[in-house]
Amino acid sequence: MITPVTAKDKKSFIQWFLNHYRLKKRESVWILNYLINHSDLLANVHFVRDVKYCSRGIMMTSHCSDEVAFRFYKDHLVTTDAEKSFHDIRLNQDESLYLQLNFKNANQNSYYASVLEENPFIPVDYYITNQDKEVANQLLNYSLHQYKKEKILLEIDHALQSKDREKFLVLSKELANLKNQPKL
Image 1 (cartoon, rainbow, N blue to C red):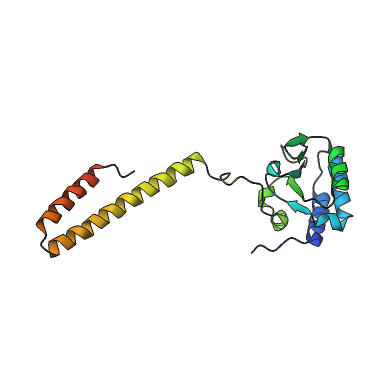
Image 2: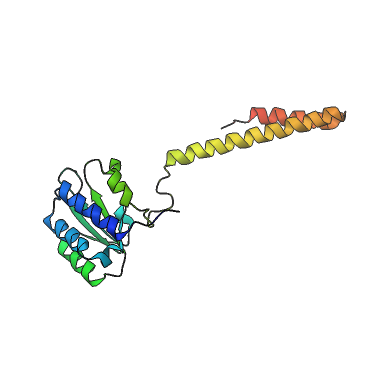
């Protein structure tokens, strides 16, 4: 089970982040400072990756990243107006708010990783590529082929032990047909 990130940990991380990175949009700093000063809000704040899938989320970017400076996502609507997001935060304090911070080497930063949570809105097949599906399909086909071959070989052994010539001939034909089929 994953331990929930405390409001204290989130506050500490945001303070560290603001001391180490300059955000592209000054309103982003205002929003983060507002969150720091309202611990009750921090309980509903979740740091995630791919915030664009979230029902209500904000993406903020530092100067050291090439990403877009600011995005606010709410129910399939997207805006770059930080003031609208600030008002939404103030008016909907009991709703979950998902934050994504873009900065240099964010995916390698242990402090950021310590406050990151799993994004519950990511689609089920998000991490599965077509190439992954093809490899999995090939592995499944190969495994089935091997299983059928081993099963037939065991049955052939049993037919030989019981001296059942007819069963042996039928199984030998099945084995020959199976060997002629492609494995992948």
